[in-house]
Length: 219
Image 1 (cartoon, rainbow, N blue to C red):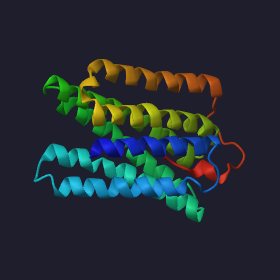
Image 2 (image 1 turned 135 degrees about the horizontal axis):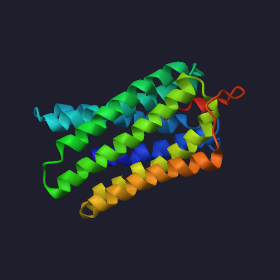
Image 3 (image 1 turned 180 degrees about the horizontal axis):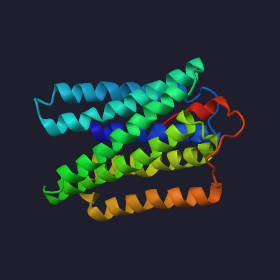
Image 4 (image 1 turned 180 degrees about the vertical axis):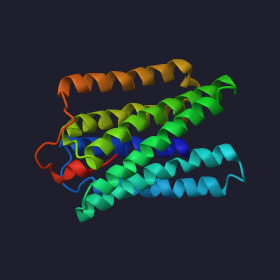
Protein backbone atom coordinates (compact mmCIF):
# COMPACT_ATOMS: atom_id res chain seq x y z
CA UNK A 1 0.00 0.00 0.00
CA UNK A 2 2.85 2.38 0.83
CA UNK A 3 4.38 1.69 -2.59
CA UNK A 4 1.10 2.67 -4.27
CA UNK A 5 1.13 5.90 -2.30
CA UNK A 6 4.69 6.52 -3.51
CA UNK A 7 3.43 6.44 -7.09
CA UNK A 8 1.06 9.34 -6.42
CA UNK A 9 3.66 11.21 -4.39
CA UNK A 10 5.63 11.19 -7.65
CA UNK A 11 2.63 12.53 -9.53
CA UNK A 12 2.03 15.45 -7.18
CA UNK A 13 5.74 16.33 -7.02
CA UNK A 14 5.73 16.42 -10.82
CA UNK A 15 2.65 18.65 -10.99
CA UNK A 16 3.79 21.01 -8.25
CA UNK A 17 7.25 21.28 -9.75
CA UNK A 18 5.76 22.28 -13.08
CA UNK A 19 3.62 24.85 -11.23
CA UNK A 20 6.74 26.45 -9.78
CA UNK A 21 8.27 26.55 -13.25
CA UNK A 22 5.09 28.14 -14.60
CA UNK A 23 3.83 25.33 -16.86
CA UNK A 24 0.91 24.50 -14.55
CA UNK A 25 -0.98 27.71 -13.93
CA UNK A 26 -3.30 29.19 -11.36
CA UNK A 27 -5.14 26.87 -9.03
CA UNK A 28 -5.14 23.92 -11.43
CA UNK A 29 -2.73 22.08 -9.12
CA UNK A 30 -5.24 22.12 -6.25
CA UNK A 31 -7.22 18.94 -7.12
CA UNK A 32 -4.11 16.73 -7.35
CA UNK A 33 -2.84 18.06 -4.02
CA UNK A 34 -6.20 17.35 -2.39
CA UNK A 35 -6.42 13.84 -3.87
CA UNK A 36 -2.89 12.85 -2.84
CA UNK A 37 -3.03 14.77 0.44
CA UNK A 38 -6.11 12.81 1.53
CA UNK A 39 -4.51 9.56 0.35
CA UNK A 40 -1.37 10.29 2.37
CA UNK A 41 -3.41 10.96 5.50
CA UNK A 42 -5.86 8.05 5.23
CA UNK A 43 -3.20 5.49 4.28
CA UNK A 44 -0.96 5.96 7.33
CA UNK A 45 -3.99 5.90 9.63
CA UNK A 46 -4.90 2.50 8.17
CA UNK A 47 -1.33 1.20 8.34
CA UNK A 48 -0.89 2.30 11.96
CA UNK A 49 -4.23 0.94 13.20
CA UNK A 50 -3.63 -2.40 11.43
CA UNK A 51 0.03 -2.67 12.48
CA UNK A 52 -0.80 -4.64 15.64
CA UNK A 53 1.97 -2.81 17.46
CA UNK A 54 4.68 -3.50 14.88
CA UNK A 55 7.09 -0.63 15.46
CA UNK A 56 8.70 -0.73 12.00
CA UNK A 57 5.30 -0.40 10.31
CA UNK A 58 4.27 2.44 12.61
CA UNK A 59 7.50 4.36 12.02
CA UNK A 60 7.24 3.91 8.25
CA UNK A 61 3.61 5.00 8.16
CA UNK A 62 4.17 8.01 10.39
CA UNK A 63 6.35 9.69 7.78
CA UNK A 64 3.52 9.64 5.26
CA UNK A 65 1.64 12.26 7.27
CA UNK A 66 4.41 14.75 6.48
CA UNK A 67 3.55 14.42 2.80
CA UNK A 68 -0.20 14.41 3.31
CA UNK A 69 -0.25 17.55 5.42
CA UNK A 70 2.14 19.31 3.02
CA UNK A 71 -0.11 18.66 0.03
CA UNK A 72 -3.27 19.68 1.86
CA UNK A 73 -1.47 22.83 3.02
CA UNK A 74 -0.49 23.54 -0.60
CA UNK A 75 -4.10 23.08 -1.70
CA UNK A 76 -5.35 25.47 1.02
CA UNK A 77 -2.70 28.08 0.19
CA UNK A 78 -3.59 28.11 -3.49
CA UNK A 79 -7.35 27.94 -2.95
CA UNK A 80 -7.51 30.77 -0.43
CA UNK A 81 -4.45 32.73 -1.62
CA UNK A 82 -2.79 32.47 1.77
CA UNK A 83 0.61 33.87 2.65
CA UNK A 84 3.28 31.26 1.90
CA UNK A 85 5.46 31.73 4.97
CA UNK A 86 3.51 29.31 7.16
CA UNK A 87 3.90 26.56 4.57
CA UNK A 88 7.54 27.50 4.19
CA UNK A 89 8.32 27.05 7.87
CA UNK A 90 6.36 23.80 7.92
CA UNK A 91 8.64 22.67 5.09
CA UNK A 92 11.62 23.44 7.34
CA UNK A 93 10.13 21.12 9.96
CA UNK A 94 9.57 18.43 7.31
CA UNK A 95 13.15 18.80 6.04
CA UNK A 96 14.51 18.15 9.53
CA UNK A 97 12.17 15.18 10.01
CA UNK A 98 13.19 13.78 6.60
CA UNK A 99 16.85 13.70 7.68
CA UNK A 100 15.82 11.66 10.72
CA UNK A 101 13.72 9.26 8.62
CA UNK A 102 16.61 8.87 6.18
CA UNK A 103 18.97 7.92 9.00
CA UNK A 104 16.43 5.52 10.52
CA UNK A 105 16.04 3.67 7.22
CA UNK A 106 19.76 3.40 6.58
CA UNK A 107 20.38 2.20 10.16
CA UNK A 108 17.43 -0.08 10.82
CA UNK A 109 17.62 -2.17 7.63
CA UNK A 110 21.40 -2.59 7.43
CA UNK A 111 21.50 -5.91 9.28
CA UNK A 112 18.62 -7.51 7.35
CA UNK A 113 18.59 -9.75 4.29
CA UNK A 114 19.73 -8.33 0.95
CA UNK A 115 16.28 -7.44 -0.40
CA UNK A 116 15.15 -5.80 2.84
CA UNK A 117 18.47 -3.97 3.16
CA UNK A 118 17.99 -2.64 -0.38
CA UNK A 119 14.53 -1.37 0.59
CA UNK A 120 16.04 0.41 3.58
CA UNK A 121 18.80 1.92 1.47
CA UNK A 122 16.26 3.04 -1.12
CA UNK A 123 14.08 4.72 1.49
CA UNK A 124 17.16 6.29 3.04
CA UNK A 125 18.14 7.81 -0.31
CA UNK A 126 14.59 8.96 -1.04
CA UNK A 127 14.20 10.64 2.35
CA UNK A 128 17.58 12.33 1.94
CA UNK A 129 16.54 13.69 -1.46
CA UNK A 130 13.22 14.89 -0.08
CA UNK A 131 14.99 16.57 2.84
CA UNK A 132 16.95 18.72 0.38
CA UNK A 133 13.81 19.40 -1.65
CA UNK A 134 11.80 20.52 1.39
CA UNK A 135 14.74 22.68 2.45
CA UNK A 136 14.50 24.45 -0.91
CA UNK A 137 10.78 25.02 -0.35
CA UNK A 138 11.63 26.56 3.01
CA UNK A 139 14.15 28.89 1.39
CA UNK A 140 11.65 29.97 -1.29
CA UNK A 141 8.53 30.23 0.87
CA UNK A 142 9.73 30.75 4.40
CA UNK A 143 12.69 33.03 3.73
CA UNK A 144 11.46 34.62 0.49
CA UNK A 145 14.40 33.50 -1.68
CA UNK A 146 12.24 33.54 -4.80
CA UNK A 147 15.31 33.53 -7.04
CA UNK A 148 15.38 29.78 -6.32
CA UNK A 149 11.80 29.20 -7.50
CA UNK A 150 12.37 27.86 -11.03
CA UNK A 151 15.34 25.77 -9.95
CA UNK A 152 13.30 24.29 -7.11
CA UNK A 153 10.39 23.60 -9.45
CA UNK A 154 12.54 21.90 -12.07
CA UNK A 155 14.20 19.67 -9.51
CA UNK A 156 10.85 18.93 -7.84
CA UNK A 157 9.34 17.80 -11.16
CA UNK A 158 12.37 15.59 -11.84
CA UNK A 159 12.12 14.09 -8.36
CA UNK A 160 8.55 13.11 -9.13
CA UNK A 161 9.97 10.71 -11.73
CA UNK A 162 13.03 9.18 -10.06
CA UNK A 163 11.97 9.30 -6.39
CA UNK A 164 8.29 8.58 -7.07
CA UNK A 165 7.38 6.87 -10.32
CA UNK A 166 10.45 4.67 -10.81
CA UNK A 167 10.80 3.21 -7.30
CA UNK A 168 7.00 2.80 -7.04
CA UNK A 169 6.85 0.77 -10.26
CA UNK A 170 9.74 -1.38 -9.08
CA UNK A 171 8.27 -2.00 -5.62
CA UNK A 172 4.77 -2.68 -6.94
CA UNK A 173 5.49 -5.00 -9.86
CA UNK A 174 9.17 -5.95 -10.15
CA UNK A 175 10.57 -6.05 -6.61
CA UNK A 176 13.43 -8.33 -7.70
CA UNK A 177 14.80 -5.37 -9.66
CA UNK A 178 15.37 -3.49 -6.42
CA UNK A 179 19.09 -3.90 -5.84
CA UNK A 180 21.83 -1.82 -4.28
CA UNK A 181 22.89 -0.90 -7.81
CA UNK A 182 19.49 0.64 -8.57
CA UNK A 183 19.61 2.55 -5.28
CA UNK A 184 23.03 3.97 -6.17
CA UNK A 185 21.76 4.95 -9.64
CA UNK A 186 18.80 6.83 -8.13
CA UNK A 187 21.14 8.61 -5.69
CA UNK A 188 23.47 9.62 -8.53
CA UNK A 189 20.58 10.85 -10.68
CA UNK A 190 19.21 12.88 -7.78
CA UNK A 191 22.55 14.57 -7.14
CA UNK A 192 23.28 14.90 -10.86
CA UNK A 193 20.00 16.61 -11.71
CA UNK A 194 20.48 18.98 -8.79
CA UNK A 195 23.87 20.04 -10.12
CA UNK A 196 22.69 20.17 -13.75
CA UNK A 197 19.62 22.31 -13.05
CA UNK A 198 21.64 24.61 -10.82
CA UNK A 199 24.20 25.10 -13.59
CA UNK A 200 21.57 25.60 -16.31
CA UNK A 201 19.12 27.82 -14.44
CA UNK A 202 21.71 29.80 -12.44
CA UNK A 203 19.40 30.50 -9.48
CA UNK A 204 20.20 33.12 -6.89
CA UNK A 205 19.45 33.28 -3.19
CA UNK A 206 17.81 36.68 -3.29
CA UNK A 207 14.23 37.84 -3.75
CA UNK A 208 12.85 38.54 -7.21
CA UNK A 209 9.82 40.70 -8.06
CA UNK A 210 6.54 39.43 -6.64
CA UNK A 211 6.02 35.87 -7.93
CA UNK A 212 2.86 34.56 -9.54
CA UNK A 213 0.45 32.71 -7.23
CA UNK A 214 1.80 29.38 -8.48
CA UNK A 215 5.11 30.21 -6.78
CA UNK A 216 3.39 29.28 -3.52
CA UNK A 217 2.84 25.71 -4.62
CA UNK A 218 4.96 23.94 -2.06
CA UNK A 219 6.11 20.34 -2.38
